Figure (cartoon, rainbow, N blue to C red):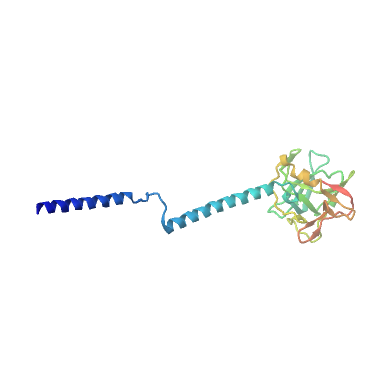
Length: 232
């Protein structure tokens, strides 16, 4: 009887040993393994997030690249109206003008028109100004832009916006997207490059190459005297 009990105990131990060996052979997932539907879904969401971040970065890079292209769209050209004009105390060829450009206060702009046009012919006159040049000190006075004129030899004529144009309205040209810099970097020479393509044609219309320059939703910018000439 004792022999039978011993054999049964040995058999039970052998069975237990086999069970332990079987358990050891079974692959147990490590704590960091991502298994199951929830983990797979989380991984997919994370992948999508990475793709979205990359897509956003690519878009920002594209916008930055487009912004750096030198074209008409980077200029802040606006309709203005001269409210006040005075002789510059230290510049015999200079006027100091206060111009309404649709802002909270008139903007001070200095122009070299004193030898070309009487003050009486400029006061309350509608004009076109470039508004995002870097401010410059001219003979001790700050100028925050430039009044745009047609130029031919020694004759100067400020450009004329349409009669129904309102101070602050912007200029557009064909398919160029208006995206003006807050302030043009002088080192890039954006204004100097674009202005070379601005001309007044034989019909006295301001052109950017072969495209008319207009006040948005109003009509073309023109001259009344000069034609076939440059702009500056």
